[in-house]
Image 1 (spheres, rainbow, N blue to C red):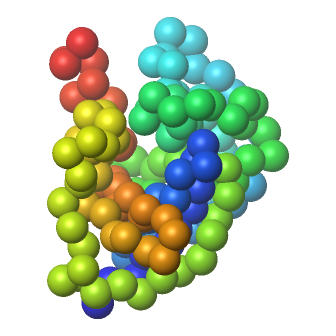
Image 2 (cartoon, rainbow, N blue to C red; image 1 turned 60 degrees about the vertical axis):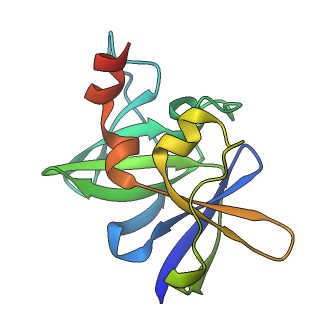
Length: 145
């Protein structure tokens, strides 16, 4: 069994294992980074830590929600860096059986399938489980381009 924090981006339900998440916060102010890739919404100071804010909708090539101010972000540490992942809304924490997780369906968007470790079929919705390392690896995308 794994606990997942679930959230929405562009009306799609996503989840991340709870052990990868440090906190959830509202973006109050943000500083744009000149010449940064489009998915980097900017940087902010969160309780003395410099946090790179990633717009998950842009990263996954979904419909962006707009400006970052006032949106929710999920705090993640990766590779010694602090990141905030912009989301449209936080849903709930779900405890799901690992045996019920399925590989991404073949008809799932290629970029979304790459960022996913699998899916859960809920009552009337598909929960896409994301791989935090893949969504935060901005160098991998630049190398692929």
